[in-house]
Every structure is written in structure tokens, then in C-alpha cells.
Image 1 (cartoon, rainbow, N blue to C red):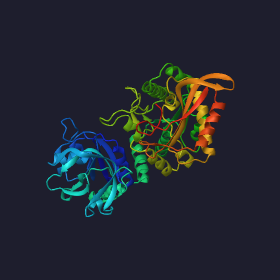
Image 2: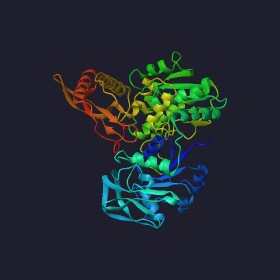
Image 3: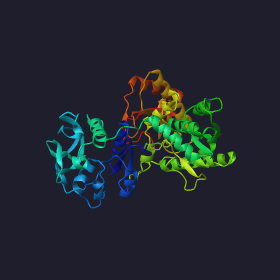
Image 4: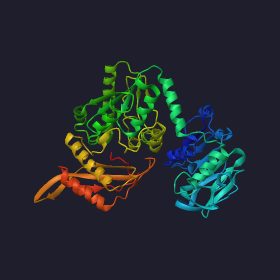
Length: 512
């Protein structure tokens, strides 16, 4: 049976990936595609529904992203959100213009409960608005199904053609009943049955990997983090001893992490796979000497990873596939369609042009971090591994601002270990991600009766579920104070400790 699919067409909005997440939470598979996706391809994919995203442009602008009007004649239900709603109105003959009063933030919206979209939604509900333009007049045949005091068309619909649109964002948590609205669209408008679950994803992926690989040999890039660990176990379930996992200890791991990874995946661990540990710390330090630009560091680390894998592949004979734990936020941040590249990931944007493998397999490419953890649970991976803190592919190379040296690595490893230990001692749970980073700032300090001129360590802790947005965690001050005291006293080369309050956006979760 062909799985149900909802397509999100990306028009440049910041919440596009959240829409896909919310649809998946309704147990319906969903993919994000650029708005340049052709009509022919859409017909081929045969989705149950299409969602137009928000975006920063004006629908009536000459250079604004648009789409062929024929999409409205395919018979596929469409939901337009924010810019997507305005584009629908513009293309179908409505009037879109600059609003006399812009709306930003939580807004009280009056909805028509007779609409399929709002059937079980409160008549007056709080929604998240973020728009300068608005639909001044709905296209002919459309019914206005929601309003605000300053927005005459907060939602509109043409039920006989299954066309729906909301000026507000139902996908964000600030829209109190947004999940109800999206669920209504998915189930009542698109008539989905909700057949996609993580268990089926795991089963389907194992089957497809087995078919793709056949009798071939596979090399897995194993970092020991959540993503690569889940990818490795998934592949081991699919092809067993055809899989060789190469763990590269590049000298940029957390304190004692190399030995911990080997204890889990090595010959004494519970998994039936071939495990190779490569100790090449000095090789990476030499490559990174004098390099300060973050993107250049990422590219160097990524390319060196591939070189190491090529060398190991030659040692073990012919290798047909390379497996990587790339996940969806990596793909988004490395640029989807015409979206901006936020940062390159060594397993996405940093690959060299020529790689000595037939193909790269990325079984987790369309999953968010929490979905990866759920996949790990379905695979029977122990909870302590599944719940492990995320760790970037380039490792501490991007938690050290400026040039990476062996001494700086030692500093950040020791500081991070102290931070982690005190968080555990305080019984603090539920943090999305937390770590210590090393700034390139050196400043004067006084320790005892002596003047010091040493580095500043920055502590980071955020709350997040999807790793696309994040808020600073409120760590108790007494815990931060204790961490600071220990780092200053126990880590040579540090005389200041700071706490990073920045959310994502505008910052990233990692430092570089």
C-alpha cells in the first residue's frame, strides 16, 4: 500500500519545517519541497494534500515566488498559510495589499465553526499573526471563515475545491488551537487515515536499505552521537556484517568520549557489526592550524573525515556505500532549494566533489532530532544512548571560537566535563542541549596575588524539541556559580566564565 503524503511547498518562510513536524504528529508523512517543484512531479507524487508556507515577500511583487495557477485545478486539497494564503488570493483574483495596521504576535481571531478547518475550535481563539500585507478582498466564490478587528480575511475557503487559507500561523505553539486546525485539514479535508508511524518508518527504511545495498559492503561514519548511533543500529538490523562502522577519534570529542563509544559499539558491545577505531588526532590538529573562519573549519573537518573513510575503505576492500547520520535540521541549515545556507554540515555541505563510493545513504535525512530518538527506541537502543546530548559532526572544532589547538581542546573538554557533572549533580533534566565552549577572548584577571591573562569559557543551555528553534534555559544561579568556581579553579588557562542567553534565532545552538 502506498503511504499517504502531504507536501509542504516552501515559499521562504521561517516556520516551514514546523509545518512538516505538525503534520507528522498527526501520523501522516510530510515532506518539504521548494516552490519550484514542478506540477508534473506533484502529479507523480500524488499527495493527499498540499500546504503553501509563509514567506517574506509580497504576493503581488514581480520577483516574488509564485506558482502555476493550474495547481488549484489538480483536485488536491490546498492550505495556504500567511504568504501562502495571500498568494492563493492573488492568483485566483482576490486583492492583496499592504495592511493599514500590521499584526504581529498573539491575536484574538473570530472563526466560523461551520468550517471543516475550525469545526472543533473555539469561536474566539488566540492565533499567531506575523504580516504586513493582508487579503483585502477574497477571490470570487471564497467564503471568509475568520476575522480580526483589523484583518477582514484572517481565513478563507472554497470547500467545493478543497481550498483553504489562514493569514495566521497554525503551526506555531503560540496559536493555541493550531494543532486542531492542522489535524482538521489533514483528516477532514484531505481524508487521511494517519497510517504513518515511527514503527512503519523503521520497517520501511530497513527494507529499502536491504534492497538498495543487496550484497554490497557499507561503511558507516560513526561518531557515537544519537544520529550516527541510530543510523548504525538501523543499518546493522538491515544488513548485519555487511556493515563496517568506522569511528574516527579526531581529537575533537568530549572528554573520554572515544573510550565510551568503543565500549558501546566495539567488540565487547551488544551490537553485531564490524567496528574500527581510527586515532588521528594530530592529523586533524595539523589541518586546522591557523584556520579561524567557521565555515572553513567545518569544510576541512568534513573533508578530512571523508579522506579517513576512503583510506579505511581501501584497507577492508571494496566498499559500495557510505552511511551518514544526516538529519533534517542539517539539511535545512545547509540550504533547501533557494533557502539561505546558515552553516555547512560536514555530512551535507562539506563533502568534496569526488567521493570514492557509489552512493551515500542517509536513512535519517527527513527526521527531526526527537523523531530520531523515537526511531532509536523502536530499534531497541538503550534509553541512555537514545537520550544522549547531541554532538555536532565537526565536534569541538565549532565549540572553539578561532583557531583550534590541542591546548584549547583540553580546556574545553575539561570545562565541559565539569559543567555536565554539576548539571547531573543538581538533578536538572529536560535540557535540549548544553555544553561549554571556548571563546577567543582573553582578558586580565587576578588569581591569588597574581595577574592572569587567560581565556573566557561560555556556558550554553537551551530548551528545544526540534532543534530548529531554541530558547535559553534558566539554569539556577547557584548551579552556574558552582560551575564557574570549579572551572576557574580546576581548568588551567581560564579566568572568566559567561552564560549565553541567546535564543535561536537569531543565534544558532552551537557557537560557530
